[in-house]
Length: 59
Image 1 (tube, rainbow, N blue to C red):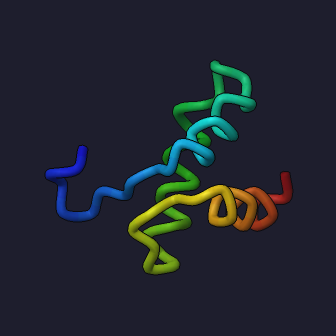
Image 2: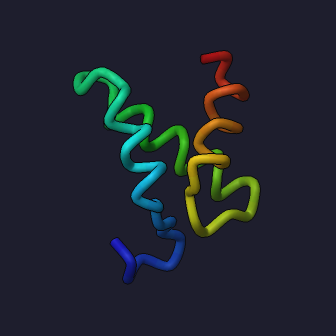
Protein backbone atom coordinates (compact mmCIF):
# COMPACT_ATOMS: atom_id res chain seq x y z
CA UNK A 1 0.00 0.00 0.00
CA UNK A 2 2.83 2.41 0.75
CA UNK A 3 3.96 2.27 -2.88
CA UNK A 4 0.66 3.65 -4.19
CA UNK A 5 0.90 7.37 -4.96
CA UNK A 6 -2.35 8.30 -3.18
CA UNK A 7 -1.95 5.82 -0.35
CA UNK A 8 -2.43 6.99 3.19
CA UNK A 9 -0.78 5.48 6.23
CA UNK A 10 -2.49 4.62 9.49
CA UNK A 11 -0.96 5.12 12.93
CA UNK A 12 -1.30 2.18 15.33
CA UNK A 13 -3.74 4.25 17.42
CA UNK A 14 -6.00 4.89 14.40
CA UNK A 15 -5.81 1.21 13.41
CA UNK A 16 -6.91 0.28 16.94
CA UNK A 17 -9.89 2.63 16.68
CA UNK A 18 -10.80 1.13 13.30
CA UNK A 19 -10.94 -2.28 14.98
CA UNK A 20 -13.75 -0.97 17.22
CA UNK A 21 -15.97 -0.85 14.12
CA UNK A 22 -17.87 -4.10 13.44
CA UNK A 23 -15.85 -6.28 11.07
CA UNK A 24 -18.57 -6.44 8.41
CA UNK A 25 -18.55 -2.67 7.82
CA UNK A 26 -14.84 -2.09 8.52
CA UNK A 27 -13.66 -2.22 4.85
CA UNK A 28 -16.24 0.40 3.82
CA UNK A 29 -15.40 2.56 6.85
CA UNK A 30 -11.68 2.32 6.06
CA UNK A 31 -12.30 3.51 2.49
CA UNK A 32 -14.49 6.41 3.65
CA UNK A 33 -11.92 7.50 6.24
CA UNK A 34 -9.06 7.24 3.72
CA UNK A 35 -11.05 9.28 1.18
CA UNK A 36 -11.81 11.88 3.86
CA UNK A 37 -8.11 12.10 4.76
CA UNK A 38 -7.02 12.39 1.12
CA UNK A 39 -9.55 15.14 0.45
CA UNK A 40 -8.23 16.98 3.52
CA UNK A 41 -4.68 16.63 2.20
CA UNK A 42 -3.66 14.19 4.94
CA UNK A 43 -1.16 11.42 4.22
CA UNK A 44 -1.28 9.97 7.72
CA UNK A 45 -4.45 8.86 9.47
CA UNK A 46 -4.06 9.52 13.16
CA UNK A 47 -6.61 8.99 15.91
CA UNK A 48 -7.48 12.69 15.53
CA UNK A 49 -8.11 12.37 11.77
CA UNK A 50 -10.16 9.25 12.49
CA UNK A 51 -12.33 11.21 14.97
CA UNK A 52 -12.77 14.08 12.49
CA UNK A 53 -13.91 11.62 9.81
CA UNK A 54 -16.31 9.99 12.26
CA UNK A 55 -17.83 13.37 13.10
CA UNK A 56 -18.07 14.23 9.41
CA UNK A 57 -20.10 11.07 8.79
CA UNK A 58 -22.28 11.64 11.84
CA UNK A 59 -20.99 8.65 13.77
